[in-house]
Length: 60
Image (tube, rainbow, N blue to C red; front, side, top):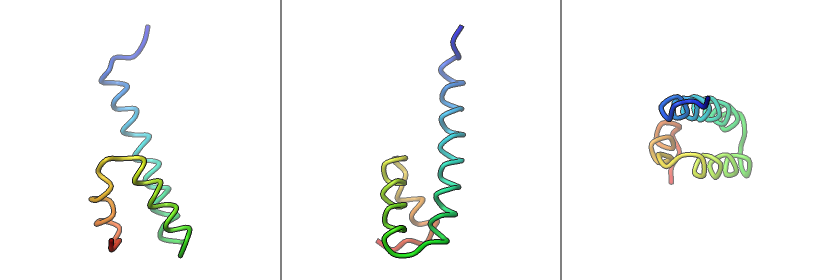
């Protein structure tokens, strides 16, 4: 039997949170073009990327 829709949603949120944590660590360590690549990945990962940019201190 499959998972409920709520369980699937929670799993997606947890996975997204873990991925964002890894991307944030990579963003803080890197510079230049790598930062740009990380920001592109964040933009494609979540619709709330503007908030994440603000939290990371990214100037647009």
